[in-house]
Amino acid sequence: MIGALLRKFWPGKYYPLGTVPAGEKKLATTWTDYESAPGGEAVMRKFWCFYRVAPEVEETAANRTLRATCERLTPQVWYNQRITSADHFWAQRGERVQKPDIVGKNAKVEYEMTVENYMSVIPDWAEPHAEAWEEMVRTRWLKMDEDFAAVARRNAENRGDGGTHCGGNLSYERYKGKTRAELGPDEEISDLEIYNKMRLKKPDLSQPQPLLPEYFGTYAEDAENYCAMVRHRHPEVDDPMSAEVDEESLVLSSGGLPHGRLAMMNKAVKHKLTTTFTRLKAGLTKDSPPLPPRRRARQPAYDPDFEAAYVAAHQEYQVAFNQHQQQFMEYMAYIHASMVANQTGQTVDLGPMPPFPGPAPNMPSKENFVAEYYGRTAGTGCSGNQGGGREITPVHHGGPSPGATPGTSPGTFSRWFFRSFYRKESARAGV
View (cartoon, rainbow, N blue to C red):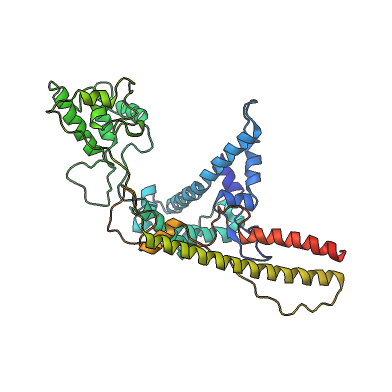
């Protein structure tokens, strides 16, 4: 329902608040754009025509939940629409395509589409906004816009190369039920074998397949430590993987409960309060396998040169920002004085018109500044799921963030300044 409403009330391109008259339009792709267009109010009002909430639920809380859902689903609408449009285009030509054939790193070259192909299957709800639809195709789907393409490449690099496990977004209990349903009642499988299957890396079919199974994260090391501890504490167990899970061996092989969590099968085993690492450790003998050290987060080294460079860059930004605001105030004061003179019929020598100050200077975030300073991709510094040696993606600073705090953007400042200054001068001139 929400996806259908987001498509129905899509504003296409709109003038953002704070832009000069006849300025540049912006493509609506986020929920923030819907609320600014405006189109968000229409979506929410139409939604409540079909649904109701319990009497004890406050209207404010319900609207807050709906707004958060719309914010999450809006980008997904355009991702799904690209797949739907491509499927429609190839279906008209008698071919059936799947999602991996269209998007992703395994997309097939023969199914690549052009702007004209997408324009030929424009949906009915997008026909009133054909220009916006074409821009969506060019900038978002075909990545012809350099700024958006740079951000897309950076985000792809920051996802890491560690792969994903076969469990997807399923919890252990849901994955366990799914696995047992697929195997049937006749085939037995232990809880640890299910967890082992869940932690397998999802194979990347575009790459040569490894001879041995690969596991996600540190599971392979954790499972080896657990099996060694079970064999030492219970010599009668031949295969720890197929046996019942031993909670005490799990606690010992995990090196305790850092942050109250086990290294593996954390939510699959009900932890007893009496099973403490201190008590179990006291019962170990000299023949016991060595306990693994606790993993600790790697602390980034302090670089005084970088900190000094960041402080200097921030000071330069402050100076440039203050100069820009001063120029902007002079420009707006001139515009206001000329408007007052026109309305009152006065002849005033205002002098030459100050130049328009242009966009406000932008200070990159500390993460992006780190990336530019050290010459690497933002977000790839200390993640354990990312390997080194990958191609560096240029950092894209872009313009002011669309999620910036209200009251800090040049557009918001210009509206506030113009209105307050206009009221004061009008009252003084008796207009």
